[in-house]
Length: 186
Image 1 (tube, rainbow, N blue to C red):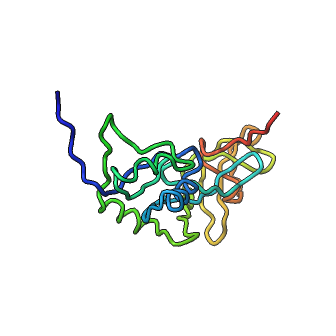
Image 2 (image 1 turned 120 degrees about the horizontal axis):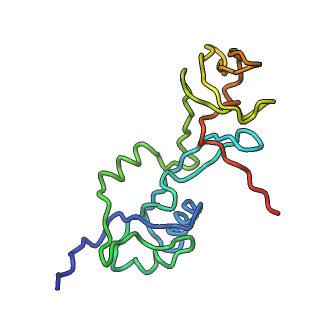
Image 3 (image 1 turned 90 degrees about the horizontal axis):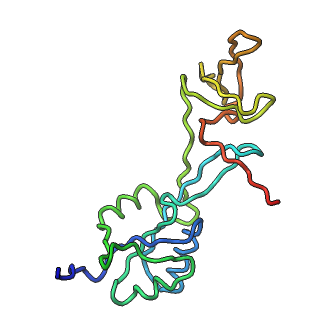
């Protein structure tokens, strides 16, 4: 029978959360479980929906946050915290995350209040895009030119059997697969 793996007492662990509740779990861990160090990097990005472009804020790692605690003394409190579903583990082994990785993430994603990394979409010439506004919503096309000094692009349209360039707002295009459909209750 293999012997159990020795683990250091205190360290950074990956904590699983309920969907879309990462920031709530982080607050509860600091309040309820009295953990001093909890890290939940978040990003802000713009996506197209059926009602137009909308800004979303999500966790960088959906369903996971990082917390520093003593496994023996605080595991039970962490697991009992609201919005937490458990600490990541493999059988009886709880892998720790090295301090150097957390520090690197903290440099990239500062924790100051309301500091959320904004991810700007980048569209370049030659990209396939989908129109999200106007009379041709849903049409797939190719970006032929970025119009300098303005938030506009030229796209190639098949119009009455001929290919023509049309200028549209950069906010009126998105990459295929980035469109989120708005689901309404019945």
